Image (cartoon, rainbow over all chains, first blue to last red; front, side, top):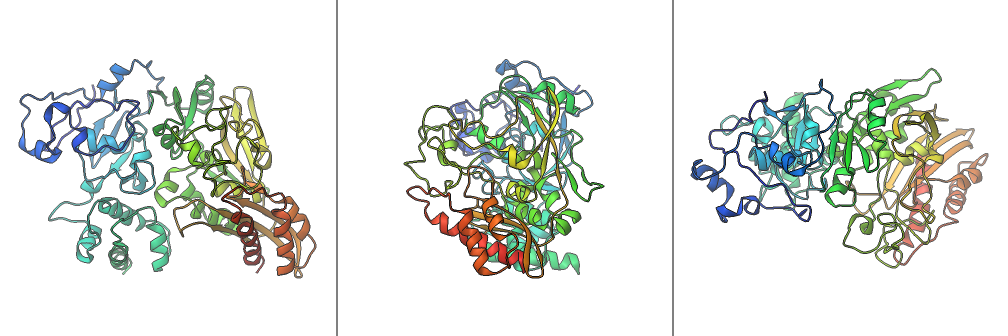
Length: 233
Length: 325
């Protein structure tokens, strides 16, 4: 049998309704919390409440499939139905195939470090690594990461044990509001392994898939240059 | 997005038979398809995932050409040593498109089927669109058309083909290999795309269930190549005009040349007229100018995009200058 999704100590697994066909707008944190919980923020909610009175489900991913009434998919039995996220395996059996990797991360297993910006592959806020390569998680169907390894900002480093790129962003103040930052850092870490040139222009082009509305670009560039310099030294 | 059935076949045969039903779509990188599904522009009843099919190889051919599997990612193709050495125009085109993240996802086969960025096509609330809903009309002709096509348009559609890769592939005269319910076939890229005419929803010659398996790029006529892309900002933006040039120069004269344009046509636009003007002529600015004039002779601008005529000419001229230098 499939393994349950693994949660951190401060996390609870919720049954979330699938998006209705008429709702394709970007949702903010508060609006995606079930309505009976009111307008508390998710983080307050997650850290402050226990499971009492909430529906905590083992078979969360199967919910949407049961409701959808779609016929069972023809399957290749050799193909894995689980994905590895930050080193832990998550069973995707029964997951509504419409769920993007971004929504799986944020709404189902609460790795909220990955941000939803445009939700259409135009801003880079949702950048994560799949098998070590950076991709837009908003345009990646979660089901298509079966058998693959996903790394999010949470898997890169932790407070007290930052990845050198995270530390460099802090040192160079590579952000203002911070919303694009996790995507910027995931891109910056990925480009360390990409065959790009050494000039500032090369780095700017390699970071072009991550938009920063606050305009922290010079500081982001400085952070990337520092880590690249150290890596090649 | 609407509900769909998800299939994950293990072989190309299985994939083709799975996708022959109405409403089925192949999904590769998903960068266009998932985007358009979220917008309710694409509403497939079944998605056939082709990501695990054995179509991700780049192989040199005995004739000196290159065979590129449909599942080869844009970034892998752009950085492939043979592509950088022999098909620089293709590498440049790929690297000018989208973002590094999207290029890690987008595939060779998928990019050949990239859909237009026409805002009326992409927005189901924005009014009629013959490409999205055949027979309803074209909102762009009298609407926002600054980014629209000036070549190959019809009274039914003026949507621009958005790809960079396909423009380079057109200049390189790639051959597209297809597998479908009725067997295998290959189509030269210049015969692959259809003009909109009065059926703009039919964009290419693929029949239902047919899957692009790979592309063969013949040996290039020269390594003097260049892709120039002009756009509203320096990165992460679609072309207003682009040009792919492959030129063989002998003794200061153009022996032969291939020119294709992007950002201005309803399909990747091969500029045969410009090539004819240049062949046998000295590689000089005056002849480049004459070639550019020929390339744009048939241009039909609309209310907001007349600037593209001049922009495209200058794009061709500069690409020729760089390629032949």
